[in-house]
Every structure is written in structure tokens, then in C-alpha cells.
Amino acid sequence: MTKASQMHLGLFILGTGHHVAGWRLEDAEAGAENFPLIERIAQAAERAKFDLVFFADALNTGPKVHPSVMVRFEPLTLLAALAMRTSRIGLAATASTTYSDPYNLARTFASIDHLSGGRAGWNVVTGAFAEAAANFGHASHPAHDLRYAIAREFVEVAKGLWDSWEDGAIVMNKAAGQFADISKMHELNHKGQYFSVKGPLNISRPPQGYPVIIQAGASDVGRDLAASIAEIVFAVQQDLEIAKQTAADLRARAVKFGRDPAHMKIMPGVCPIIGTSEADAKAKLRALGEFSDPASALKVLSERLGHDLSSYPLDGPVPALPQSTIMQGHAVTLTALARKHNMTLRELRDYAASAMGHRLLVGTPEQVADGLEEWLVAGAADGFNIMPPWFPGAFDDFVEQVVPILQKRGLFRKDYRGRMLRDHLGLPRPPHPQAGITIDAIGQTVAS
Ligand SMILES: Cc1cc2nc3c(=O)[nH]c(=O)nc-3n(C[C@H](O)[C@H](O)[C@H](O)COP(=O)(O)O)c2cc1C
Image (tube, rainbow, N blue to C red; front, top):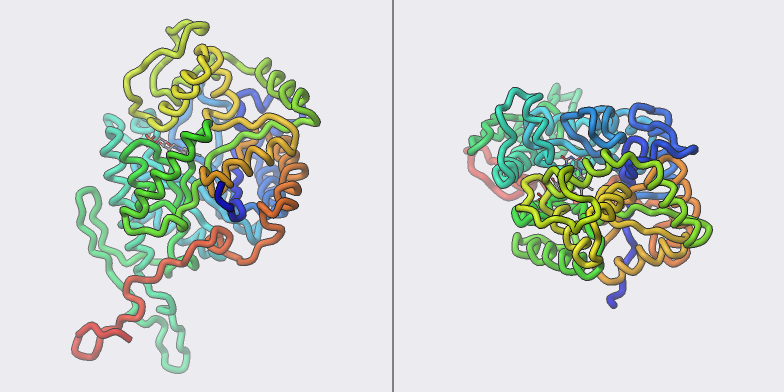
């Protein structure tokens, strides 16, 4: 065992909770379009000194999707609202690189970073859901690896746009009549394979330099993208040994890309179900299971495995399926879990219904804290993305009962040290590429 530092904690806020039946519990509140509730949850996470809150996104909906995502706020609009109602916690959300435009998106994230005083985080997703294509006039959803190639260039363009203005470029020197130091403004002039963007961006460099970049790719190309750009990796892991191997692999890939792996925080999702005893926690999980709509649960698993499972016998084994083109990482880890525990399709369906394929921790507050500590100390995680099965009660349980144990064990902060999300995560602020370089009177570059 290696000595671990403190863990990072994110809160994945999702509609009525991560369990498909979370919304049906008595103390659950409908959260997807309820701003006062979302505000209350984010403020509770801030009081508990969480690193960040996170909102996922998809660009489609329909009658069969998970109830928590059937209707929802556009997440970047939501972050802007939360920036006004919180002061320290990081504010992160998904934005698609397949169905967005780099200039608009770089501008929106820069705005949120300014509005929040440096607390923005961007979960770079390639868009797992093919149904989105029809909402953007596209004949089809681009293939898996092509989506990743587009994402790589998209992020490069966004970073270039955030570097449009060096720090301190807006001088506002009233006496000299100089508003901006134009020598510190840079056009991007990007002409790549997928994007052509001139720049500069019409907003100054974000307080954090760049918003914190998050990525959740788990396939081979997905891991490469994560290891090359991600400062947080949202992992999907249920098994400690596999989680350790995956973390080691991601860190080795980061080194290969010339990065310090300490600047990439691996945060697997965890769904905590907390009871006064282990039996009480298990009874809560069973109660959730009884409220589940089997069709919605099977749809969640079908998405996770990348194939429609409705024609397979529920009490048979989990079928061997061709490689998923949707979420390869989820498919691999869930199938491995089913094989390891000899699960039937019904059992795997019920597991995926609970935490959408993420790790379930069912027990007393001490047992949940132990489950987090074990992975942190083993080097399988730098922190966790907490995915409560319903809101707000299940999150309140975590904040009131588990966080104090983690703090007492020295595994989690008791207060924030800095103001920006990068401060909470211990991440450096990316320097401007031209910082320290000036152009002399005859147009030559000189170091200043
Ligand atoms: C915690 C977490 C949050 C995610 N959020 C989104 C999301 O909001 N929208 C989306 O389309 N995909 C989301 N994904 C899916 C990933 O972006 C990615 O498509 C998935 O992990 C599969 O990648 P892979 O094919 O490289 O394995 C999320 C994944 C994880 C683990």
C-alpha cells in the first residue's frame, strides 16, 4: 500500500438521482428542472468542501430514456446561474465536441470561468448517443474513432482561442488612452482537418488559463485522449484490481504524452447507499429495485453495453456481444463484472439500474468511507465522482455521515485553500504560450 494524499470529491448531480427508480422514493424531489433544489444541492456540496459539482448532457431525449435525463436544463446555462449562487465549488459540465462549434463553446466556457471567478470545468464528450445526429441535420452519428479525432482537434482549437489574449492585455490606461495592449492579442488562424477558425476570441483569457478539462473515454482511443488532455478522468470501475490496472495504464499514457501524471486526477464514479446497518442499506437498495421499471432498466444496460438486449432471456447469462461503438469502457467493465460474478442478464440489469454501471457502495457510513479509502490508498483513484441514487436525501446522508469520517481520517479537506477549481485539485494554471515573449520594434521575437 502506498501512502495516499487527500481525495478529491465531485458530485454528479443528475435529475432525480442515478438510480432509475430514485425519483419514486418518498423523500426524492424532482431535480432536473428545479433550480432551487439544484442550488440547494450545490450549496450543500460547497459546505461539505467538495471540489466540484458536475452536470452531464445529451442532445436527445425520448420516451424510454432514464427518467433523470428525460428533460433537463442546458448545463452551461445552469453553470452560469450556479456561479451566482456559490462562491468556491468548481462548476463542471459536459459539452459535446461532435455537435458544438469551437468558437461558441470556447467563448461560453471562458464566460463561465470569468463569471465564477475561475471555477469552470469542461467534460469533453464525443457524444455517446447516436440519436443526437438527427437533431443537427446529420445523416448519421460519426463513427467512434472519428469522433475522438474531431474531439482532439476541437480541444486544441478551444485552447488556442483561450490564448487569444495574454494575461494583462486589457490595460485600460486612461491617462495614455490605451484600452488594450494589442501586442498581447493573438489570432489563431487554425486550419485543420475538421475546423477552420481565425480568432481571436472576443473574451479575455479565462482566470484559470483554461477551464479544467475532464474526459471519460475508456476505449483505447478514449484513454489516449484522456491521458493527453484530461486533468480529471471520470472512470467507470467496479473492481479494485482492474481499477488499479486502468489507473496505471492512464498514468503511463500521460507520461508518454509528456505530462506529469499527478496533473491528471482519476475519479471513478461511486453510488453510495448508506444505512444505519449493512442490512438497512441493503434493504434500501432492494426497495429501490422494487420501484424499478424493468424496461427503463434494460434500456440503461442496453446503452451501456451498446446493443439492444430486449430479445435476450433475462435469466440467461449476459450474452457475448460485438464491440460497442457507444461506450466501450462501460461495456468492457460491466461484462467483466458479470463474468466474474457469474451474473445473469437480470442481475446485471439491476446492477446497472442502480448506478448506471458505476461502482455501488452499500453499507454503513464507515463501510462506505472504507470503500473509498481502500481505492485511494491502493492508487486506483485520486478521488471519486459521487453519484447519489436519489436527491436530495441520499446526498444529505453522504454529506452528514460519510464526509465527517473522511475528514476525521485526514482523507478529505476541512476547508478550501484557494478560490479556483484548479486550486482545489492542485493543478497548475497553464501558462500562456507567448508569455514572456515580446516582439521588438523590428518584428523579431525576443524573450522578456
Ligand atoms: C462520469 C461520466 C460522465 C459522462 N457524461 C457523459 C455525458 O454527459 N454525455 C455523453 O454523451 N457521454 C458521457 N459519458 C460517456 C463518455 O463521454 C464516453 O462516451 C464513454 O465513457 C465511452 O467512451 P469510450 O467509448 O471511449 O469507452 C460519461 C461517462 C462517464 C464515466
